[in-house]
Length: 138
View 1 (spheres, rainbow, N blue to C red):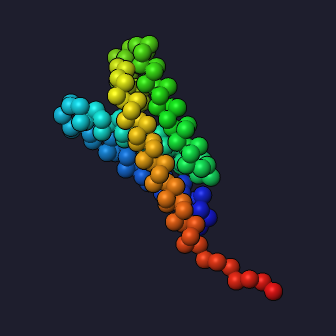
View 2 (view 1 turned 90 degrees about the vertical axis):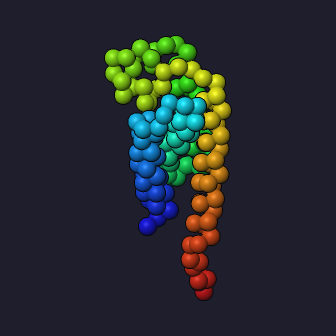
């Protein structure tokens, strides 16, 4: 299986696990700073994995920049009050857009995206070294 296809499949599986974990934290974890941080970290990881699934050829740095920009934009959108208003009429929107701005969320997003980039880069490097070499022709 070509490397992009493997990366897409792995990203999709990890994204599904991340979403399930995030929903479990949202549903069953007590509403504390720790559960808020966990939710933010899982959100940023889901953003990164979603991009890696959609564009498996992209470099980790590019995926990380786009994921960080997305998370930052969503957090800044919360300053408008729009996500909170939307969440009152359609509660699932709160899972995607959040509700209330918190500067700590920005830090958590950036740290998780940096960790995801590092792990992704390490996995890509390891998979490149494990590919069989072709015998020289001639």
